[in-house]
Image (cartoon, rainbow, N blue to C red; front, side):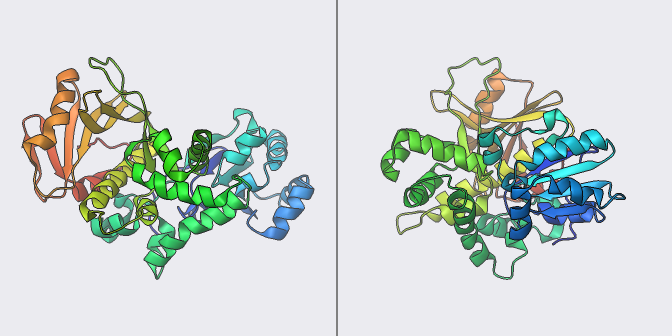
Length: 383
């Protein structure tokens, strides 16, 4: 799968490229910049030498005068290098730096120089269905997710199950982000029940046997490690009383599924439904961030409980999307979209479902979810 064309568009100048481990940052950059000077901070000896003497980076760059691009992989491991990068950009304006990272927490925590605005921030996401084309399977995606690391592995299930453990060991424990690792591991299981939902801090604290302040810190850690994100309520020109809290998602539906505890009382359709909503969420997030125009991702829920799963809002995009894990569309499935259209008649309304027919019911376009995901590409109109 290393030869697939990604929807990611690189910047012309220097940039940060963030993304969780396993999304293919290194693979993509080696394809885009085959002649780049590569500084791999996952190599322990090199990491130690640059931590001890950051100015060594300048020596490595000067030894390659023909190099026009320098890639520093996992920059968060040696944030002190950013001062050297800044100085090098000032010295050689034509030199392009690409700085990858699987965590922004250490960079923010140490208050390091982020190149004074001389490098933009970009993100690489798990695969989109369009990138896989015929290799995309909705059934497989709901089971193991869309991480390149997992989809390219001989044993996908084992790789996925080991993924979170590796993250906890190397990123959380290795960086000393939490004091009580057992409590954090319990929190991961508990927060999995909030995937696609509003987080109730008090309930999670109680079930994790943790303080509320610890839960808030754990959530921040997940977001800084790029393992999760929250989307806000759409509140523009609100005509009804809306809730104010954001909705929580893991960055990949396979990671959610591997964390979600399962037992005899857990109905498979419930887990499949949240995995499906998460799969759509991660595609919409990638679509927003890969595109050349600014579009923000929201959801909509009234205090009376009427909800639309996703709202896309931008200069040339206003779209409400509801996701249903069902083979047929029922009138009840359209309730949230109809309410949204009453308040925002200028919006486009789409319902995604597991059926095979593309339907138009009133003002709502009903689209098979596989078809929708395969057609979803940056800078193309939705629906």
